[in-house]
Length: 346
Image 1 (cartoon, rainbow, N blue to C red):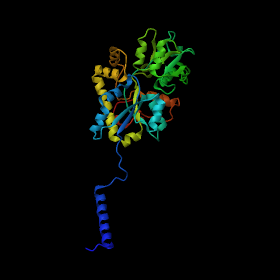
Image 2: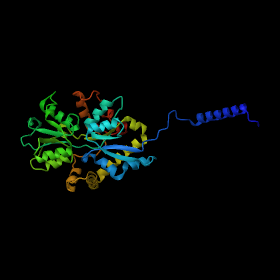
Image 3: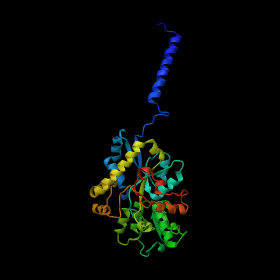
Image 4: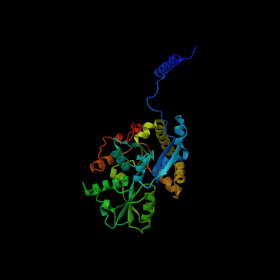
């Protein structure tokens, strides 16, 4: 056959026609193919409440479930932050995938990112009481604090401890008096606040804390409990949760599901293996506490490791009523992703 321009055009048109048929038959995505992330970055904080994350790290559970989903083994990075503000800033700037903290910060970032980043909770990671302890023998209730006292908590006005104290203040002093104790509060990490309280050499006379710090304090002579968050909230209440941007979940569905599955496996293992979980806590947190002391906390019926949000609407409703958040949630499901909506949360 003589090769000429007409022959070339005919062959070219045939190729185009064949390609068009192939596209019609097998289909081609309208957008670019996008691989899931190969690095998962999680924020961690100190304390017994973060034991499920320690277990996930100890046994490589996220890696296990990601590979089970048919994806390459990811790199899992565990990052520490100076506080909740820095953590949420990293989350929103896409320098962090999963944040961890109390219900107050979760509800706050859900409210402030609604319609934009749409940050929501992945799951609860525990239900734990928070104790307000003091070394001042004159303090029997929140009404007894004076200008001579300073109450340490992780972050004034926004931490779950701060919100708990505001609810307790309103209960004690009456409607509209929720800020009555704010003037006595100072921001301080739990380890530093515990050291300050127990030293007796600083202005810190009280600390609204969390396990294990609150139990360390109560083991010292002269320290007493003023209140428990369970008393303030009327029962078991979620202390910590994990949360993420909606885009992380939608762009990485297999990785996200693997994360939830890893968290559930960690919970089941902790609840079935309290002694071994105690050893994991000691190892992962470099704890110097006595093993029996930690095991006693693990067996405390008030402490529960669960993905189920408990009593979170008590916090969210209060925060909306006093103007801390603008959007009023109708249900706890508004600020948690649907993977745990089948749970009997509140």
